[in-house]
Image 1 (cartoon, each protein chain N blue to C red):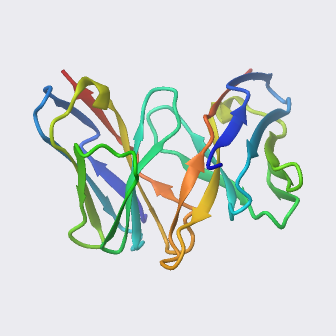
Image 2 (image 1 turned 45 degrees about the vertical axis):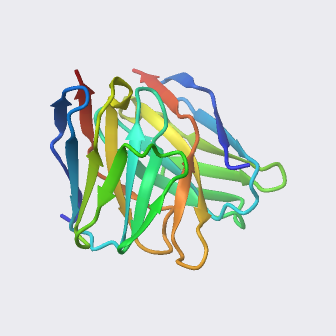
Length: 113
Length: 116
């Protein structure tokens, strides 16, 4: 089945220790998104890629970076995690022009100690 | 302008009842209005979506009603079942322009509990 895969599902990191979350997709979608979702809140868009064109949301902290080496993979790097960065991180994909229909992965639950 | 306001925050319905969730928006440039369903520990999944030139869309037990003049839309879940217990997010999508990409603006979410 075509899908969006996120690894790891659970990640524990220490305050200030860099962490990388990964996302892969078999849907061959050219748009990929990263969202942050805190408990009982809506997903908050951090950035998205159209192919290799990177689009950063204005309020995404500089602490968050992303890489998309190819169509299938996308990475979220948190350079110096703070306690406030503990959240579920969701990766999603869509076809160009069909951004209303996004396919989400299961998420990575990040804990910062 | 970019906000989507959703209510209620939580909803409890008896099995077989109708669940109704409402959303309102301001930006008339939104081009699609999807609803997403999210179970605990999972990512959201598209449930149903409507374009602003359509007043109603039905898929099985799920119906979107859309009122363009009032800038409101709602999700109706008929014959609600315990398996429908989840968090529901309304959203609006915006076009980013020349690249024909866009993004979703989510409502705050409604936690639905359907009691057996």
